[in-house]
Amino acid sequence: MTAGGPRSVIISGFRHTIESPRLHYPEAELWGQSISIRNWDWALYDWSRWFDVHTARPQAGYAGIRLLRPDILGWYEKQGSERPIYFAEDVPSVRACRVYPIAEMEARLGTGRFGCQMDYMLALALAEGFERIIFYGTGSIHLKDIESDEGIRARRKWWERHASVLYWMGRA
Image (cartoon, rainbow, N blue to C red; front, side):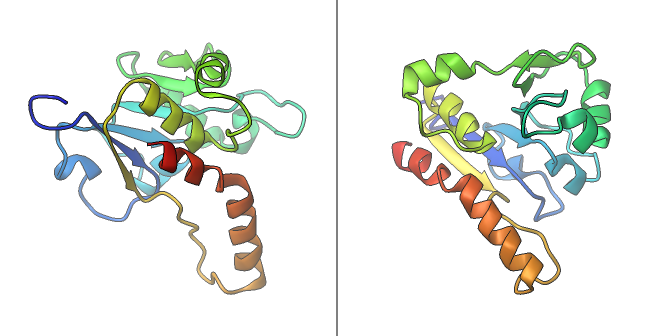
């Protein structure tokens, strides 16, 4: 526990308010993830760490950040080195690049429970001893018509990739 209460981290996804998620928890770290910076119009300034635990280059089954999200990669490249941005591999063009310790987390916390990036974020929070995890804008699917065929497919796809988050929530 820190002087102001439990050691806290905000796991941020999509934007739902004008103000930063840290407004009500200024002592908490704010961890952002991949595309959510777009929802902040590129202007969320008080984040502590960023996560895009993917490869920049293409690999089997994944086209890579460089092809899928070149605008996001450009934002990463504009960041200084004082706050880490975690990737699955070294990305030399990003000064803040840190390779996420996938093997270490799996050795420490077990394998078979990692299905998405948020799983790795929660595992790191647990490994680092955070006592309170606050979810902000996570688990959101942003479509105009969530009940359309496209919306139903998107919800199924999201659930298939993110159901493992419930395991990590239970561990926390």
